Length: 377
Image 1 (cartoon, rainbow, N blue to C red):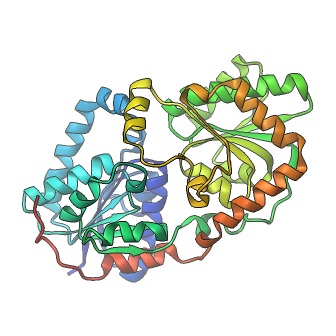
Image 2: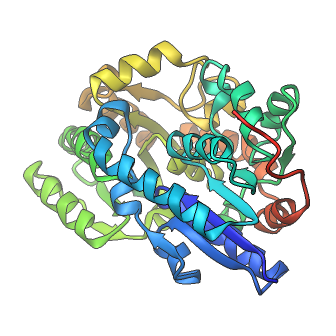
Image 3: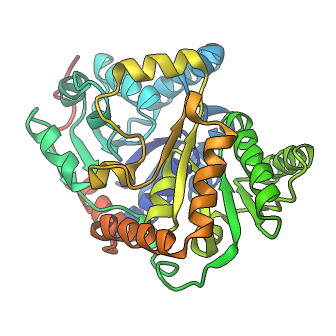
């Protein structure tokens, strides 16, 4: 009988990684039957995976609370689907706020399935009481970074380092493109709410830079056509000529001379490609204050965390203002030496992530037997 796997991803990056894992799982066993929640990429591999990321990809406590009824309805529907589908394996792709609650409820209801978390929540960034709770509900944790494994194993959770898929996605661009000294990339994220808070700061910085260096050119990228249109309108309102492409973020990361990048997957991708950049991030103030109270690390960007120091400047919340961002981007755009030094450092700290085969290793670790259905919360 074909294996049944239920998968859940809640945002664009999770959909990308979920689809990569699904394809690798099908290489291992073409008869696998999938169901679950994801985005267009996962849905394209199996119509049993519903596309919900347009609604589900929200950031911040306040933003989630405003959509509480939606998430509650999706939660209940998903639990019902799990009971009906009776998967052999439940694969949770990142998205811990929803996924870990769902895993706990599945245990509580006695649903007999192995539960695998693919992509570790950033427990090393927050107060770590969650780790022991995760060990009670998960059967296996698949980690993208080697330093994450001991955190889980010390709590009794079977954790495996499978490598980061970034190499599969970006190895062809790493160190192969020439950078245009006149192009500055503005990358405010893939979610509309992020863009609405962060892109105006970046555009304000661009407007200030143009006063001093009118020859500079700006470019941006969006996850979809609707968001690209909204961003183009915002750029026009700020008086900044900034073409917004769809799906061209990696090309910009490989060819721009420097960039302002929103916190998230894009900062690691930028570092992997050696792009000199600064990190810019804003959320609602309630979300920010809760996050600051819980954070257990000094930096938000993965490149800085990997380096153990501030390689790239981080402009967060009240510091995320046009004047400060423009000053850092001007420093980078005007100094080839500064750009080359930062680019080399970023590629050095991401070198351990350059090994190919991450999705294949994750698929093997997902299908490998582990005790199922014995945990409870």
